[in-house]
Each structure stands twice: as structure tokens, then as C-alpha cells.
Amino acid sequence: MASGRAPGILYADKLWDPLAGCTRKSAACRNCYAETLTSEAAAAGESWAQGFAEKGSWTGKVDLRKDRLALPLEWDEPARVFVNALSDLFHESLDNAVIDQIFAVMALSPQHTFLVLTKRPKTMQPYMADKATPVRIEQAMAALSPDGPKLPAWPLPNVWLGVTAENQKEADRRIPLLLETPAARRFAAAEPLLEKVDFKPGTWLKNGGGGLDWIVAGGEIGPGANKCQPDWARALRDQCAAQNTAFFWTQWGTHDAGDGAGMAADASSAESSARRLLDGTLHDALPS
Ligand code: SF4
Image 1 (cartoon, rainbow, N blue to C red):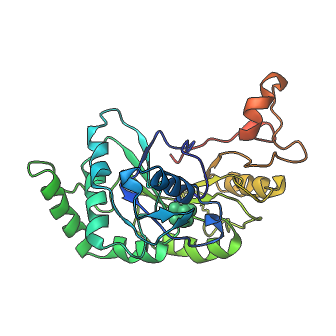
Image 2 (image 1 turned 60 degrees about the horizontal axis):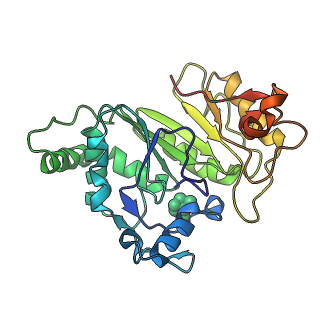
């Protein structure tokens, strides 16, 4: 679900991949890192990847990786965990029973904060809003941990939900659905940023809360990557600043920033840090 980004998702401490397989959904998927990695793993004979991708393309199969499901329960140190860098939790082909098990693990791991990013808010919204969902999740929790705690609240306080908004069309389509979705925190990932996007200050971004809590953004990585224009990044930064919304700039992508936008304030560190800077400043805010 991370749209071409390499495993180091800069705004997360850990990755957790309880699913394998996916299918492309929108322009953000054109350099899908997960598709390449899964295909290479399948060709190398890795058992987890068999049947999910072949010759560089998804096969259409999406399923639970049972061996990965309970991993967060073993991590004692509190972490910000990115969920499904290699798939999409709300893929249309998944049964609710699979999604329920993943939410049950998140409910049983209150020490962590989970970041769920999807390109499929049409599936996510009814799942989260359905009154039967927390009942099923509590049953899934009991199956995983018979003597464990009950569901603490719904929506889960330690799960942040986000949608990819790589261009205006997808932002217009996905963000209103996200804002109708029950969630402790809501975020949008404008990554890969493919054009200037209006995040509708005053409507989607709201000073004082009630809109998106966080915008994450970055340039495209991969063959034929779009060159991210500095003004696209500046527009996001300024829209967030005007509404006191947390903004995280990840990197410029395959191409360097133009017009000095990635210039490091300290020239000695320019080579390594310029990829993360916007007009000489590191933007790495998290929602409060
Ligand atoms: S939704 Fe995510 S994992 Fe699925 S094809 Fe698109 S970028 Fe790849």
C-alpha cells in the first residue's frame, strides 16, 4: 500500500505485513514496490510469495499471512507500525473475517499506534461504520487470546486511518469518504505526489480539528517517475500551516528537487539531507 516506496517508511518505526498480494487501483500504483518485491520473492522460491505475483505482475490473489498475523503482540517496545506495506487491508477480495483478525491484533496491542493506509475507502467506510464490526472483532480477539482483554473502544484509539491522495481526482474521491469513516485519527498520503493538490483548507483541513489530522507527502520513486515540482510541495506545506495541520515531507523521489527547494540549510550535510528538506527545512510533524 505504500505506492512504490522502499521498506523504510520514514513516518513509521516498524512495518507489519499480515497480508500478501494486491491489485493496482490508481496512478499511485504504477511503480508499486510491493508488486516487484513479491514477484522477485516468488521467483526466488520464497514460500510466502507463491501465487501472489509472477513475472513482475500481481496475479490477483490476496490473502492472510498467518505466520505474520500475531507479530505485534511480540513487540514490547511501543512503536508506530505501518500496516500492509505489501498489500491493502481493504482490498475488495478480502472477507471481513480476514480484516477482523488484523483489527483484533491491533486491539490486543494497545502499546502500539497502527497506521492503516488504503486506496479503497469505499470498502473501509462501510466496514468501520457497521455496528456488527466491533462485535466480530471482539470474537476474533477471544479466538486469538481467550484470556485477553475486551475491545477497549470503537473505533480503536490506537489505529489511524489514511487514504492515498496522489492527485486531485483521487483526493476528491477518497478524502470525503475518509472523513465519513469512524477513526481515532485520519490522514492523507499525497505520495507519490503527481500534481498540485488542493486539500480544501477550511473543509478537509480545519484549524481546531474535525478534518484531516495529518498530511504525509513525497515524490515518486521508480522507472519513469514523475518529477515532483517544488510548488506542489510548497502548496501542501502552506495549506497545512494555515490550518495548523501536521505535515510530514518524506523525500523528493527519484528526481532531485528543482529551484533549490531541497537545499540544506547547512551545506556540509546537503548531500544526505537535501532529499528530505523543503526550502531548507525538515518537515516531520505528527498529529498531536
Ligand atoms: S494499492 Fe498499494 S500494494 Fe496495492 S498495487 Fe497499489 S501501491 Fe501496490
